[in-house]
Length: 210
Image (cartoon, rainbow, N blue to C red; front, side, top):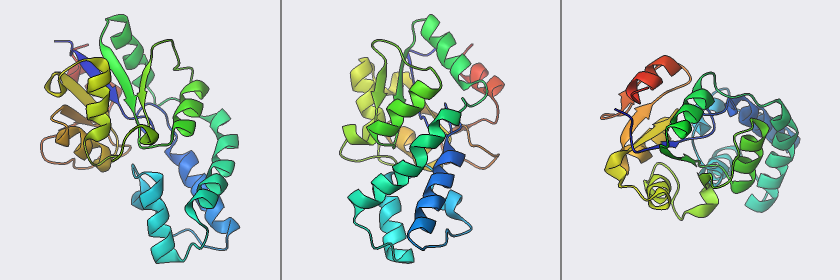
């Protein structure tokens, strides 16, 4: 049965942007004389900019103020956005749900700037589209506020919605919001307790009743 609402994470779920974020972050670190740690990707996946900054400051000695650091990181990211590709199958599912009249929103831990750039790069922009960025809430994922904000904007009860996310951080947020949560990681892994774990767009379609 088709759900009333589906709320999508962006980076890594709808768009294959995680490699671009990792490349930009590594380049920004090198530009201030810090060697990126080998587990950088795993440590920052799904995490918002401020906690990533705190980790880099506290563990690696990043000395720049946050505002200067994030400008530097985005200066490296934005030129890469033109190469951004959708995650295979994800936007097709989004558009099929849209054609069926299912309420949807993009719910991201990224800044508004990145949400808008990424969605524009893959052509996922239309009048009335609902998006929730890290700038739109007090507490980002893994807390539930971003997904609850999406439910409020869409006019649905959280229990009537699915949350789809590729990171443990995001899946935890969906579960905390009381939503049926689909965990679709980039590579097969165990999900948080209570999440529906999938590994393909075909499995996603089946879970959403398509």
